[in-house]
Image (cartoon, rainbow, N blue to C red):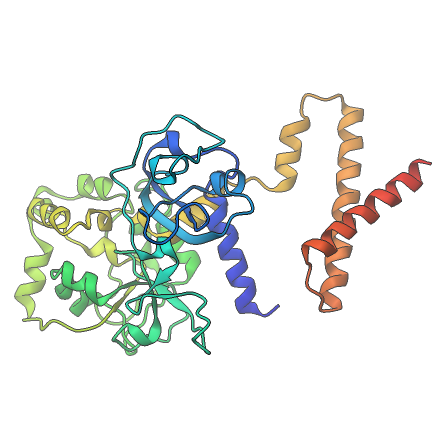
Length: 375
């Protein structure tokens, strides 16, 4: 498996780790961000779009034609509501008829981009990588972004041309902070995540980026905390009332650029937080841009931090047992871990895919060897 595929696999783990695989997320309301799935078996073309949480995709829609939608913001699980025409959620039966605050697009029917095509596309010989817009959360082919894609290994966010038109004030920020081939971000993933940690005004806040190497120009001259409220409380009254957007507009006149725009990951910290601008964000439907924990990076890293390792999870489950039984379970766990490691290592050395059938055979052989040892 090449390095790119390994990276995609770890990213998929992070996306799913941030969502509960066993309990329907509906009681938690409209979650800031969660993994969302569409069921093509239950909701077909021509019906109202609907999305389900990870737990419902696993339990209620097992064996169905499921479409993974990555993550969506401010979404509440639809499983079993009136959009499913009689199909009931097996994890939670009592739900409202609809979740009126949910946002839907053609992704829920397996179509993406301005070309409105499926992914993967049988008619496309290339099936190039797609990039998600952080505003509308649709996915786009690079060739349909109407802008040169910046060749940069560092993390970035993208806003599509349609959403730039929807929030025209972003053009001013793009002129000063957007990423281009000549002005690329230099922060690594770990440096960006350190800036997004929730220790308000403590180590790891965006204030700490002052000691990190910055790219040329204004791209990453970050001075705010990852929590907008904390940042505003730390500012002097004169700074809280001044309008950064007007100051940028006064520097030079900006002509609107066409096509998608790429941004460095900490660009949101540069957005003005005066009262007039906050009203403007709400009117444009983008108030979430002020929330730096809204980013996918913040969601993934939070999930990784909260996920217990298998060893920690094991120890939390056996603390009440006598010491001898704890040791016995630990020994058996280590045996199983070593057996699984050997199986995966052998498959990797032989360049064999670990199919469900191969894994089932491994478990059956493991059970057979266990029986022989007992006999």
